[in-house]
Image 1 (cartoon, rainbow, N blue to C red):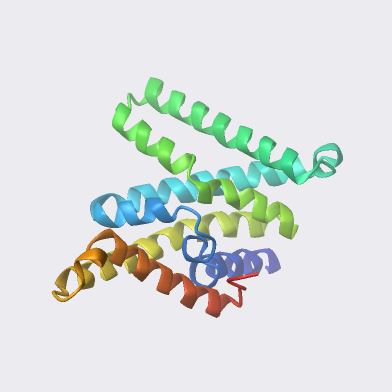
Image 2: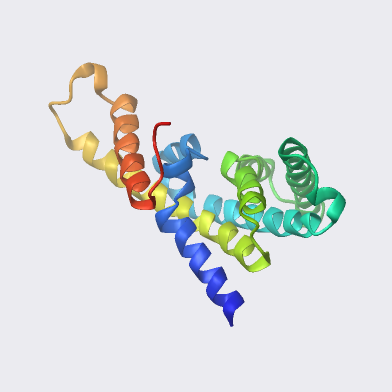
Length: 197
C-alpha cells in the first residue's frame, strides 16, 4: 500500500507543486505553443505522460545495475537520452508499420518524446533516488503538469487578448512571456524553490 501512496504523492507533487513547466522551464515553449492550438493539448499531454513514464521506468531499471548506477551524471544523461531516442524510434516504427499511423501524428509524437520535460524526468528520478512507484508517479504527474500549465497559459492568453490598453511593445508574445514568468514565480514560491542563486 505504501508504494501506491508514494506513487500518488509524487504524481500530485509533480503536477501541482513542482510543476516542471513553470518551476524548471522544461517544455515551456511547447506549452505556450499548445495553448494556442488548444484542441491538441490532451493527445499531446498523453504522449508526454506516456513517454516520460516509460523512459522513467526503463531508466530506473537500468540504474539497478551497479555499473550504470556508478557512472557520472553526464554518462547518465547520455544513456537516458539514448533510451528516449531508441524508445521513440521503436514505437514510431511499430505504429507506422502495424497501424499505418500518419506522418503528421508521428512528428507530433517526436516533439512529445523529445520534449525537454520528458528528458528531465529520468534525470530528476536518478538524482532523487526515486524507486519504481515514484518514477511512474513522476512520469504521470508530468503529463498532468503539462495539461495544467497549458490550461493556465490558455486562460491567460484569453485574458491578455481582451485587454485593450497594453503598450504596443508588450502586446502579443511579450505579454504572454511576462504572464508565464509571473506564474513561474508563484509556483517557485509555492514549492520553496530558490529563483536566483
